Amino acid sequence: MYRKILIVSLFTFAFMLIVLPSESHDNQDLHHNISKLSGDKCVEPTQLMREKHHIFIEDHSHETVVNGIRTKKHSLKNCIQCHIQPLADGTFPAKDDEQHFCAGCHLFTGVKLECFDCHASKPLRKVKN
Amino acid sequence: MIDKANNQLSRRKFLKGTAKLSLLTIAPGIFLQDLAGARDPATPVSNKSRWGMLINTNLCDEGCDACVTACNEEHGIDDFGRPETDVQWIRKLNLVDETSNKKYSIPMMCQHCEDPPCVDVCPTGASFVRADGIVLVNSHTCIGCRYCMMACPYKARAFVHENLSNQLPDVPRGKGCVESCTLCVHRIDRGENNTACAEACTKDGAQAIIFGDLNDPDSEISKQLVKYGGTAIRGDLGLNTAVRYRGI
Image 1 (spheres, chains in turn blue, orange):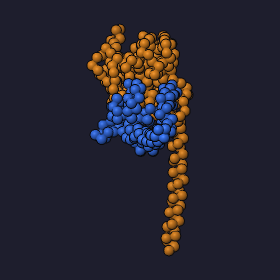
Image 2 (cartoon, chains in turn orange, cyan):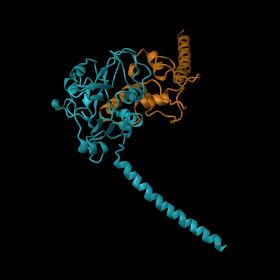
Image 3 (cartoon, rainbow over the protein chains, first blue to last red):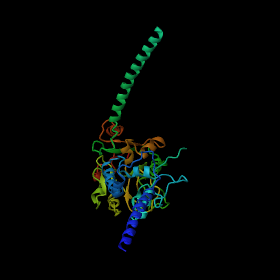
Image 4 (cartoon, rainbow over the protein chains, first blue to last red):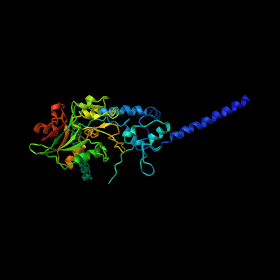
């Protein structure tokens, strides 16, 4: 009897080992529409960005507004430049669209996103006449 | 064979000569760029410069609003068809002197005071003077109380009453905040050193607006201020404005 329970629990454990990583892998693939033009890495390691991007952006915004520092690293404008790319039909995803890099995660986690009430949610593309 | 060797030599000499020449021409270029004050984006602004404008009201044309249009376009300011609440960063005033009947047309915007009343009254510290003399609103701390609008003697500030969309990347704007002329701070930080209104006035208007560094004695604006002087509107308040007018 105990042996059966042991075997079942071992199987369940093994199953979880196989299934869970593949699920998280799927999560990572949620946002594949990122510009490769500026390299294949973000300005900070992915995990650090997931945890602290809001702090980086907020600190940088203060430096920009008050001290006029316009470096690209940690600037929201630069985030948008890489992370928001046109959809298949050539338009940019709306700020509350799941396909928008920021909105996708914020909708999923239920965290209100207020940056784009004021800031541009898409890069500026100058149209050639 | 000999000719070929000579040819090679002369080519070598030629290359050496052009290299020297290019060095001579590049070096002053770099030097000039440094003088022009193209700031490294990582260094904070300093009080070395104080940006300002000189507006010649004798040249300003009553029917022209090139500066207003350019400002609206530069900052993504939309017209909602509600003049009482629509945002204005710059507006044209047409005045008549009652004694002489002389007509004046002047563009009016934030005067970028050295000691601004809007900063004095701001309860959150959102209204502030940047080191280079530009008076700004930090929208991250602005609570939209509009005390600054009451305090400003120039009626230069505006409150955003409408939900906005399609803001420009360089000019974040949003409902519930007060805003005013930033002297095109995004352009200054890029090293362009000209405002949208001054550029438009030079191109499409009457060349009435000069933008420049008041702290630099060699700048066009400083030279003209020394030569012709510049009136500060409501100079009696002693605010030492960075926007000065000629001919009023």
